[in-house]
Length: 178
Image (cartoon, rainbow, N blue to C red; front, side):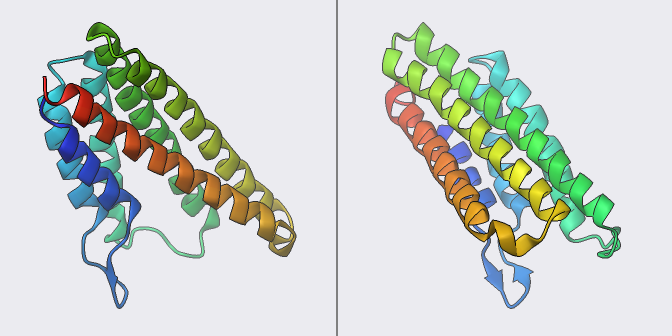
């Protein structure tokens, strides 16, 4: 099954920013394109991969706004709206990616991979919800009170992302060779 390696490397590029001075050398758009290529190859195996591709296309379009100065940096409402729309699209993308892996793993008899896909999405969901709540708390109160909470939320989000990366790698090794 081809495609998982494109998704894997695309996710890494989405997660890591390679900046030179203030310019992102490998923008999120490049990661999105790699993921789209991978999901296109996987889409014939389950409809969840096609659904994931639709969400990553929306994320690719949103990533273009990083380079178009449409938003006034002083308009917090638009900035927060942008962040939350991004979070929701990421959730739906990761949900469909994990669900696609889960369904294909089930069909091919890989019970451990099937369970991992289900649990990794739940972890990612809770990490994202935690991050969203922390952002809201920071906006509504004194930011210095939530330094430790912010740190914990960031670590939780990083761990959940690494677990999704490991899931995609595992899917490549278990499903990709067949």
